Length: 171
Image (cartoon, rainbow, N blue to C red):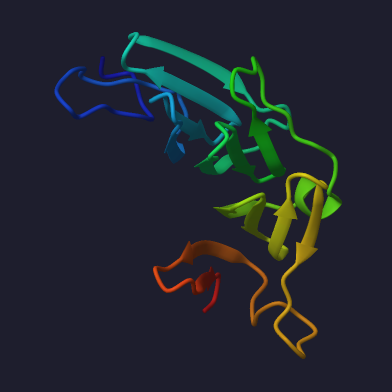
């Protein structure tokens, strides 16, 4: 279908799979094998290849989805231009909690799971979000008043030696 845009399966099993008229900015797979695609208008598309089923849902804040992370507990973490959202395993819809405030209004660009904490990078810097206490603690370099030379955290990676690499907007 030449009118379908947004997400394409090039494995040869299907010509294409669309997410309406919007682009796809983020992809993730959950432990059950479902492929998730996040769109610019806050829509999530799920593709269950084993069952041949698709479904779509919209995050409550209707913000553009920028990053997806499949958590070890089956939660799909959703970073949007309007904060951090989540889709619990088996839940019919996503939620975007109002707390912690630091993560409910920022643009979220990067996510990294570390045990019970989630490293969250976004327009207001880098935070360690404790999923149990629902608190977000900003990361500050020792002796610094601000996190980095630029507060736009775009990428996160924990390497094999345990070092945390942080990519920012302007270096």
